[in-house]
Length: 153
Image 1 (cartoon, one colour):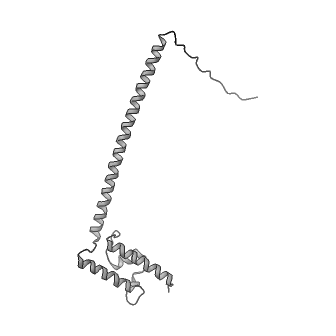
Image 2: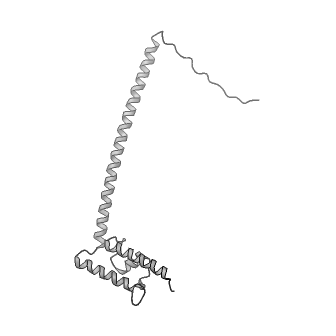
Image 3: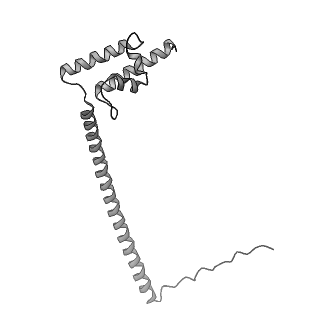
C-alpha cells in the first residue's frame, strides 16, 4: 500500500523523534538502541528500514549516529539508562515523602494545639459557670422554648 507524501513526512518525523530519544538513552522497558526498538517506538514497520525501502536512509543515519556515540564511548546502554532514570525517580519520591511527613507532623502539632486550647476554654467556661452560681448579680437566662411545628389544617 502506497502512502502519501504527508504520511511519509509524518512517519519520518516520528522516526527522528524516536531516534533522538533512543540516542539520549530514553529506552522503553526491554528495549535497546537498535532498529527494532526504533521501529516500535516510531510505530513504523521494521521492514521499511531495509533495502530500497522508504526509510533505509534513516536506518543508515541512525546506525551512523550510534557508531559515533560508541566511538566516543557514550553509547546509551538500556540498563544504565534505566538505572539512572530510576535513581532520579527514587530521589524525587523520597523528597516528596519527606515533605509529606513534615506536613503530617505540622498538622498533628496544630491539631494537638487546637485540642489543648479547646480543653482550656472548656475548663474556663466550667469554672466561670460555677463561679456565676455563687453570686447573686448574675441571672440565668430562661431555657429556650421548643416549638413544635405542626401541620396546618
